[in-house]
Amino acid sequence: MSVLLQRYGWALTSIIVGLTVLWVVVLVVLPQITMIDYSLRPNLPLPERDGPNDVLTLANYTTLAGNEIHRTIFVKTIWASALVTFLTFLVCYPIAYHLAQVATGPRAALLVLLLIIPFWINEILRTFAWWIILAYSGPLNQALMALGFIDEPIRYLSGNSGVIIGMVYAYILFMVFPLYNAMESLDRNQIEAARDLGAPVWRIHWRIVAPHAKPGIATGCIMTFMLAAGSYAVPALLGSPGSRWFTEIIYNWFFEGGNWNQGAAYAFILLILCIVFIFAMMRIFRVGLGDIAK
Amino acid sequence: MSAQRIADVFTRAYLGVFFLYLFLPLIVMGVATFNSSRFPTVTPWQETTLKWFSALAADNQMWNALWTSFAVGVGVIVVAVPIGVAAALFLSDLQTRAKPFIYGVMVSPLLTPGVIIGISTLIFWRPYGITGGYLLMVLAQSSFIAAYVMLMVMARMQRFDRTLEEAALDLGATHLQAFRRVTLPFLRPSMLAACLIAFLQSFENYNTTIFVRGIDTTLTVYIASKVRTGVTPAVNALGLILISVTILAAIVYEIRRRRELAATAAAAARARADEKAEIAAAVPAAA
Image 1 (cartoon, each protein chain N blue to C red):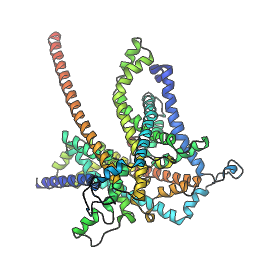
Image 2 (cartoon, chains in turn orange, red):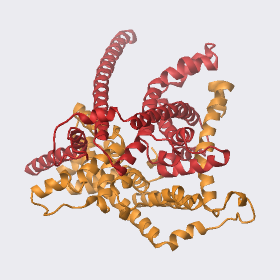
Image 3 (spheres, chains in turn blue, cyan):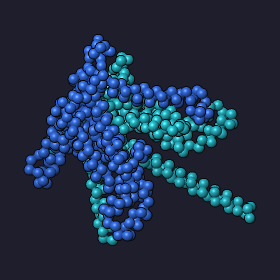
């Protein structure tokens, strides 16, 4: 604080501190705390709020355990998000490696630009594009039938497959860039040395590139999982009533069930899921929070 | 050597497939604009037409939604950029053991699912009589977009030569003058980039917006509701226009970047030459 004062004087320091505190307290921390508080209270009509019935309870949390449909959707959301994360990683790893270690100069810059362009376009529009492609009589089914791979069209949009395909596409960038950043700092000589000593390609990646890229892998997986588990846009467009996502249940508590307390509890469960995933990744890849939030 | 060759061919093929995968959906969406089918698709192809552009132009709801998105984006710039800059300055000068924790809290909105940011904002403001609408959209989006701004400004701040500020103060500038004439001009490029990112992030936001929009409709909300309730290729026309603008912007950006790169390279070469001349001049004096 004294450094700030010395540098910027009273007036500016109070503006800087004021804005920062306003942001952290009023826009970030207090809303979260209010949400948790909300989730621990029963849904009461207005006159009864703060009355004798307004007690702390875990009832909103036990709803999830008791409701089989919601539980199934919650579990589905977890494994599907994990699958999305894994597939996105598989798709992105070779690209990130190529950008970081193989491509050089203007060519690398051009590839990075090509990679970014689709992501300047709305997530909704990108998802809409997949909606066209995956439609029952859409181009993908037509092409697969013309090539003789399938005999009749597949209904991608009435199961989970459409949502998973759409999500892998939507979150590529959030996986590629952490991987790329981590791989870029790897000394190329290490790869050369391993190659000269006769290591096959897979072993170079397993023993040298991947270990070096661990913080990037962890960050990419965390971002992708969080985005997938928390996505409302992709399941809303590419899913069907039969393949709902946990966020859609949360939305329904708010705007169809009219039970905000219940919705807040489900939202907090989603948040806890993401936090658990973050810690799991940190454990698996043995990286600290500082490596991730860079 | 042949193993290397196989790997090269494989990499090339993978790159090709990957970028095809990246762009094909956008191409399909764009091409579907010109199909006269009432339902956006490329199969079957009915008739080539431009009618969906005029349908788009006549879609007043779409124009209203576009206007709302634009207004929210500007609101987010106004709120999130000053906050992000202030937080970056605050954090750059913070010297306490709690710094990693404070930093963690500040970047936490980036690791929080967007729906939760929307929900918590909606719940927090309800007792104060502020319900979903323009103000809440701006506040909810700003709460995480400010973190992006902070990271961008902090990255630039790390390269800032603090002695410049001290020099200004020593030479009698007031704190305000030093800030306005020395610090701000240095941060300006990162602030402009932050404004652009803030606007784009706001413009494309859906997950947070859907909870705090009230009865307002942004462009993303409008497109999503159209897809669910009966979409026509007019939305494709809109997508095609947005894609074209984006690609144009990317080309302009790339050209500018290359020019700047060339300019800095030239400047660096000049500086190196000057340095050599100085050293050359200094050597005989030392001898």
